[in-house]
Image 1 (cartoon, protein in one colour):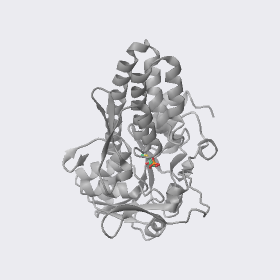
Image 2 (cartoon, rainbow, N blue to C red):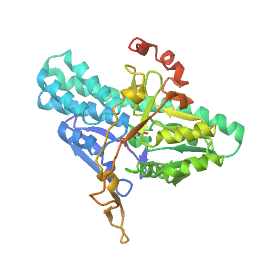
Image 3 (cartoon, rainbow, N blue to C red):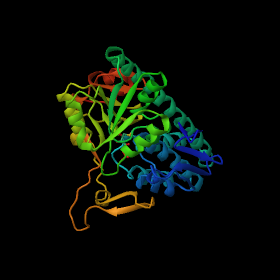
Image 4 (cartoon, rainbow, N blue to C red):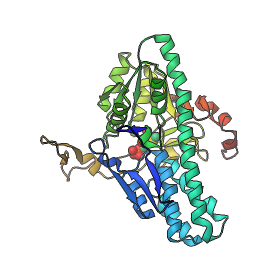
Length: 364
Ligand code: MRU
């Protein structure tokens, strides 16, 4: 996507993998700042502190961290140690282990002196594949939006939670990709953007949509049910961090409540997801997916501009107050109308038909 007219991706190699460039997303939407990571620990820290975030981008960042690790020490013990540290960085998104293991699997077949070159090539390949997958998700999802428009003949209202736009991937996004493609096709639409406390990723979504010229309105997380009751939402589209073989979905905290309201109001609830976010080894999401608990300070403090326009952080909740900060929740498959994947759109019960290679790994 473009930032100030310049085509921009969220992650890029510098000097053939001597370093990796990222956007520091913790500074958005107030400041657009790029950063250069020269070793894998720096990229690991960027994942942990959410400078890079969003399941698909975490996966690709994990892969590039492994490339930087090969530069330092490509021997077996070192590769296994870095792998273990990397995948523990953020446990909920399936993509992190997927991305790290794409590199580990590729390099284990070759001599240590060849490993950096092989890792670099693989990382480039999966980075490009992510862009193509997201574009395909957009094309399939845009058809759903076009169908709604064909019936309604008025702007299509889509509600989204968190940020599953280009910032959460290498480019295009997952949940927002159908929005961008439908908008490119000239379909009139409008996006309700959940603020998404406590990290306010909705403000990243708003920043993206503003840049692309797509009409949107930011709402408090608690407003979605009311807006659905008043028939002002035609479809909910969210992303996913981990999807089980039966279609249970771990996604940003608050997604489950939106799915419940959508079910009650018979609003279609779509989950846009690339194959890297599936975990075919599990089925019961509620009991099998590890939910990342993040620091209570994310709830206690909030960043914004002060009256002089300076970006600052203020204490919203005093430090002695007990808080709990689960970062994700699980929406059961029964609340999901369909998945929008790079292979097409399908109801949860048909997922393993869409990914037949996965059914081999799934034991009921
Ligand atoms: O904690 P984050 O910001 O990394 O959260 C992940 C997400 O961006 C969302 O859960 C998103 O909806 C899925 S990732 C496309």
